[in-house]
Image (cartoon, rainbow, N blue to C red; front, side, top):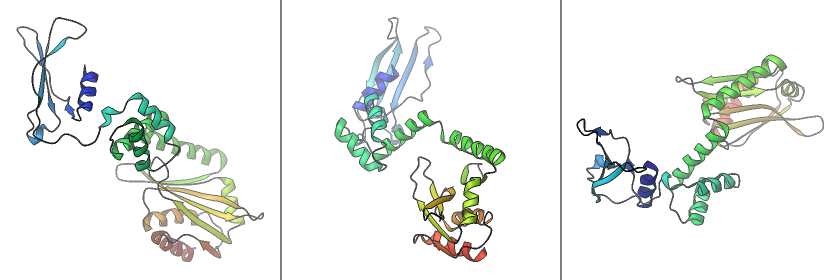
Length: 268
């Protein structure tokens, strides 16, 4: 019954509070369940009262209700309006654009809905969790993989966590990357991408020019923000693996990165 009520509420652009406790009449055994509007805290008097009956497969019957609200109904469709077809379409469209507003507009246009972009964003998070696992599980798997590489293939990694033991920074170099940066470290190029992954973390990429004139990645780092402290942490990890001093360091005009770059340049 909860599924049917959720679908009905979604079509009416209201949200029901299902976190109520069901009462039972000790004498008759009848169960009574009352559902309120999710905005009951705003003194909305809407309610639906259900009681158990003998007939099956629908043991509950709507016995009384107050179908009026003291507030405007939701402007946007909520997550309960996301059908299986919409979920499948989201899976097919998510690789075409990383812009949530554009993706939301495509879904709204195709399915004649009015979702807020946050609803689509959190739905994509759920889809990714089902496909790849929870974010904390991914973080643990990544650290374990890098630890195995460090132990078995002489790779290098370092991590940083916050007070809740959540992963906030991580950097990584394979044995080959380490050799590259210590062979071709006259010119170093540092660049980053802004939250282009499902973790919403900044990817810092360091490359060198090899003897064939090609760029080769020699250092990677995921950072939870783009502050000077984060860039300094990453570049300090890089500094610990370089033997020698770069002559030229290229980067974009990201203020915090430039500050961290010059600090990194002079402390080597």
